[in-house]
Amino acid sequence: MSWPVGQVSGFAGVTIKTLHHYDRSGLLSPSERSPAGYRLYSSADLARLQQILFYRELGFPLEQIADILADPQANALGHLLARRQALTDQIERLHKLVDVAERAIEVQRTGVELSPEERFEIFGDVVFDLSYAADAHLKWGERDGHREALARAATHSKEDWRLLMAEAAEWRGRLLAAFDGGLPADDEAVLDLAEQHRQHIARWFTPCPPEMHCRIADDYEADARAFSLVVPAAEQRPGLAGYLRTAISRNAERQGADGPGKGADDPGESANGLAETADGPGKSTNGLAATAGGPGETR
Image (cartoon, rainbow, N blue to C red):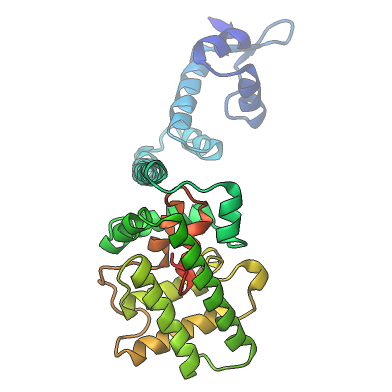
């Protein structure tokens, strides 16, 4: 017995276009043709289609499905075990992203509302990448410092945001002046800027010991999304992120702490962790994350 393509499409739940694609790619070519040249699928064809749809449901690409089905003696167990692990990892990530969304919803419900005009006035050109907040939460969501930063951000008023963003702009101006003026990153004045940045994070969001500050600085140099929260793209200079990272590292040494890469068990988190607070109370995501950059900027 054989079935035409339209009938197969109906009971298999796939489109005729999909069946035609499977035929052209060689993944599933019908065994028969009608006298008029129409595709006819046999019971064996339908069994193969069932296998294809099974693997597709698990997310296997067509090329890999073809490889699995090409050898009837092949053991698909290895493929299935690998796919199970990938799906498990994906489920875990999705659960964490749901948590990100729930936190943002809660903050929006309880926080300070800003109009679009007020957001532009307060946050200016600082741009926040939402993917950075998601990555931050996945990386640092279980840290106490991350949670505290979120909680404290939710209590900031509109005037708080104006103040800390004004401080951020003033601090950023002095950082750029030092860099453009050729001051070495370990100059005392530049180290003072680094220390002011650290104290600002602690004052507005979460305790920031020098070791944690170094990890934040690592993010500045490694992730353009992080550094854009400190210095908007239009104001950046080549080498500026590394300059700030060096200053923060030298300041940590001046404070008697270990440099970058140490203090991994510190209760804080990298700049990523603080950045997620950018979805804070009713403000543009630019907001809190932008403050991560310096005195008047946190992540």
